[in-house]
Length: 545
Image (cartoon, rainbow, N blue to C red; front, side):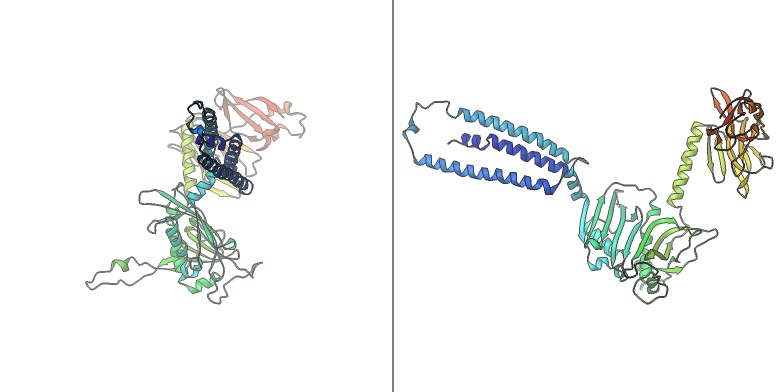
């Protein structure tokens, strides 16, 4: 038996079908997973194929040896046909082509399953590159002895974190512990920038109830906005100061000493949980909710140490220590922001520490300011846009002109306003009337309208200026002209009830204004008026109701 015959029979149609089915199962396993269902099938097909290879190879060498022992005269017969073995070559060629086609077809599909978000194979490869699992020892978990150093040391050894990098927290860091200070759960999203400005992140997840393995997800893409507000070092300093103060540890609920300050009012007193939270620089909400005891991080004053030559040692100069000093959170004015660490005992806040209060803007404040700047920029670009805030409102006619109402006094839900239009200032545009400014609308730099409603928003007044705001006069619309059209309406309203004026608007070069019985009344009844002289006078057009 020749080698061609061996391979032609080895790669027979049954083997090819088995090979194709096996690759299909492998592809679907890479694409969809399901180990319990597909892995046994793959192993069975592989075992059958391997068994066939072994049996046929043994048979081949056995026949070959037998043929060698039985030398016959046929070996020297020159009359043997020259095309002997030609069919084996053709069969083998066809079989090899089929194998190449099957391998290429399913190989390409398996390759695609390894592409991002395209299959279970990608998920496995991505997880192997971006996920680390490590055992936490008792020492790593001991918060009272090591604070967070045990966790950070492990991240430095196993996850590529450099001890010299400045660390930041991307969201709220949360750690739960028992009374003995043993860490029970960790959820933290930390990140850092290396010397080249490259981003590195570690999403840390640990739950002692599920085992002693801590999972860390690695990521090299993320936001680096507001770095100063996200610094982790204030938390580490506050933890160090806390661990140096046994009295505060007892107040926080740890079993280091008996303390009357420990609050045990909880439904699960048998399994107390101490929770530490840190979100970076944030609003302490001091003015509305002062819960628990407050402490501020203070730097200890240490005596200068000098060497033999009278100079202060560099090592001593850099050895800064901190303490936590009782702190009265401001309730009336003053700063209510800072790097905040809160400690809870069974969901009851016992202690809050703050570092660097009042030194920065919070992220929320920055984002609000940036949003306002974008809104104003867009208003200036597109023109005829109203932007409101707590202090009043501004109408942007174009990039160069704006008109504003500013609150100058407030009482019982009503406000008094002043008006500004460039160099024009009007201290009392509403002639002593107070209420709630509804809108500003100007046709150009001189002609425009102000709308003022009462506190209950069931009526409003419109004021018109033709001189840019030097003077305003109230507009009285001829609502009585629509009395006949209103007759017989289901609500029994008359024209005298139509006293809520909406902001004027232009349509095809014509100025209109609508009037109803209240702020939401336009949905079921309204009058329409038009002006032919840019708002100086108005005439009734129609009624809908």
